Length: 421
Image 1 (spheres, helix red, strand yellow):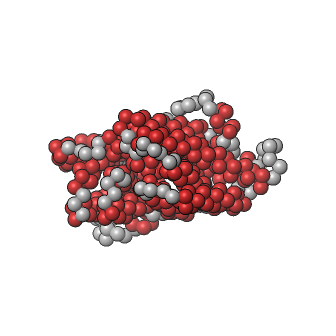
Image 2: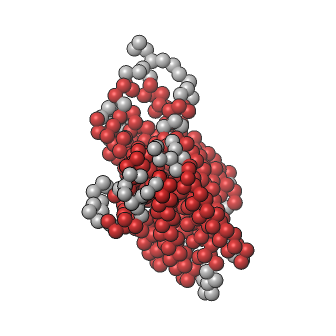
Image 3: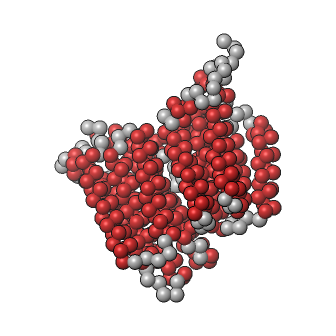
């Protein structure tokens, strides 16, 4: 029994990585990111490429880091001969393969600037993963790694060659000295607590005590969306506002334009994804919500939930309107505000479509797959809008139709909400 069982590296790959919602929520965006990055390289869209490159890289590392937390939370994994080594091997393949694809695509298509940014994201991802193998508390920093890379894609448009080479050198040193980080994949009771909390909260990067005791009016405005989310809804809203202010400030000083619009659309949908994930994990809360005296029926509670989602989409609409309107004012001598209207409608419409699709989902596994492909669709629409150079009245009509369809779909999805009652 002490001899390790020889297994092909792909044995159990689907069951371990695709049936676990934590890693799946990073794996699917990674696959989409690889495809999108290669396509963007082919079309030579330089403004968006740095973001997709970094997004893909960090998703690969975050997926494997999440499974390292899961290994620390399961006491028995050390008892099965070769099990831990088998999972670690699969994780290394998940990290290496997408990076090789991106490197080869960049070399073939002469996108050498993407290689320099990829070296920075690989350094951050490697340090993050090696630390997560030792302690589960580090995983909450995954979102901060995302946001740090987003800032780098805006500020460091042209990374010096010496900095990229230094990042590669430091990455190699970290890998060689990985044992110095501590005992890897050791069972820890805290890891199980962090694992369960992350599954319920949608991996919120915000400290639990943040905004405690504040925002009662906002929670009341978004009720019953806030009923499922608790304080997390206020935290997500504050986080989105902070990112909005950051992008607004960057545009004031640097006029970054298109990348900031794509980033804001992406983060808006990601935060909605987290909101919907938390609601899926707390389905049992419907049984107490519908008994409140403010609702006379289950259908009324469902309609109230859908309208709360529309209020959140309207909040996204206002932020989008201010951001893109400001960009048009400072970039164009004679702004027509076609971009402002079309981007605002498509971004908020995409948020409504995410809410509509989420209302159809009952189980978290199906939800993960459905929402990831929905995110890909709505962000592709927004990306087309951002990359379009000239707009006509027909484009505005299409944006209005898209928004109205999203609004209708969200309203009609109310009756499909699963209330577990």
